[in-house]
Length: 632
Image 1 (tube, helix red, strand yellow):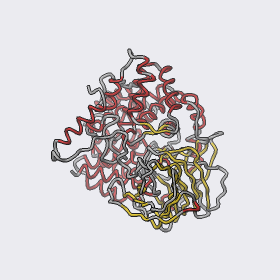
Image 2 (cartoon, one colour):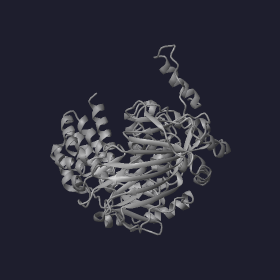
Image 3 (cartoon, rainbow, N blue to C red):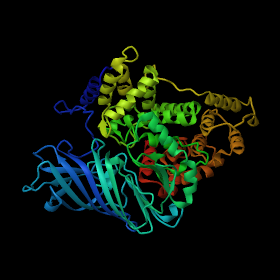
Image 4 (cartoon, helix red, strand yellow):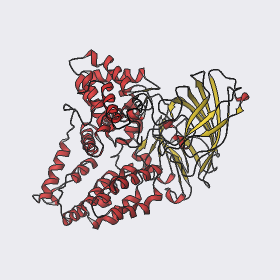
């Protein structure tokens, strides 16, 4: 077992150095460095961004300016380097106050396919400033910005008004704001957004539910957040209250359904504060977006962006809301310093989600979801190279949107569960309370977390678990031998029924699903025999109407099986699923299953071509990557 990251990193780079010329210098991997930002944050740090942007639906562009208020760290500073992607910069000015701004020269550096293009701003020789610098950038976004999706009216619920929304995580904020696009920098921000007067703008800031439609909206985010949490949406949006601090925004056509589906949000918030400490963000509202939103949810502070695929009508998929709410502590309050440390956001949040769901829905529901998460983790281990299976692997190249699959979610959750099991819930809860309090509104690396864990928990209970055991989770592939493996009695029963029915020892009418959760049905489908006949699949579909399911997770699981088994009678409804949803999780695995089944690669590409206009750029990129891997 490797006992420290130093040995692990050295081994990686010694191996890579053997393939290079012996005279070439290989820089050692720095776990605290963000390899996906061009910004010279060692010399200057942004503490505030002020935006003034006009939303132009006719050109699919944002047009205006960004003012960056920055703290100079290095007095020898001669230029400011910012992150951009496809931004049209018309003018840059700098100064120490708004009254002493002067034009600055700027140029773009070399473009990287993943990271975008660095913007170099040369500071004038006669610039008068000491520790503070104001940088104003006049710019316009590109119509194909990777963060922004411009939806025509026909792709919205109402069909009468266009819709715009952003998705800045992981490194897409740079495609609509020139800034230091790294989670290691936390900023406050303000914004003035100009829109068509009939539309409403909302942001990850202080939205007022009573805001009149005026065509000009002002926002303030007083707490410092990382750039990936800056978010904007504009559309025919209305509000419904859910509780004293909570509510839902969405198009009027789905407002009632959304208010019903997420009616427990205030209870979730109240319970979360009991578990994790004070909620530091004021309001917690939801924005239910059109179907093309690429994720289940995005934890933008004060206003989580949510997929409409959760509108199952029975509250069965609200664990996503619990997850995004839990991010208010793990991720938003305490943020991973780099994308290599993403498990500190997602893994810890998945653990907090399970704790919150246990309070609201009980242990059986949590057990079911934990088992499904564990099975997804095993699938990821099959698809992700060992070097990326560690929770905190070296990560200097690749794509922050998808370098571990969902390993950092599920393996991270298991590590936190292992810590709880080892030290007891009471002791571990005290540790979490102090962790959030001591690191509030800060960023943290895996190594800093490990040191804090060692000082505040491990060293106080050395007989329970030592540092080297935690290092195995952080720096080694797969799972340690003593990892907690979740179990569920209800899922075990469903698996046995699936096997018995597949073998013909029971009939379809012997299976009662009246008390089943959607998670149970998903597990049942996943445990069907590999050699199930077309007739048996048709019988199953006819009795349980799986191809017509209104539950997105059941639909996803079923159509993956349909594609893998080449059950063509259901292909028409499979294609309908691909056109109904835009969430990457719901469509990419179905395309992958089609492309990998040995016969339907071209069919999958044809279905994608037909549905592509309904997808977000992030989803499009993911599916293109899937096809490229299959075609290798």
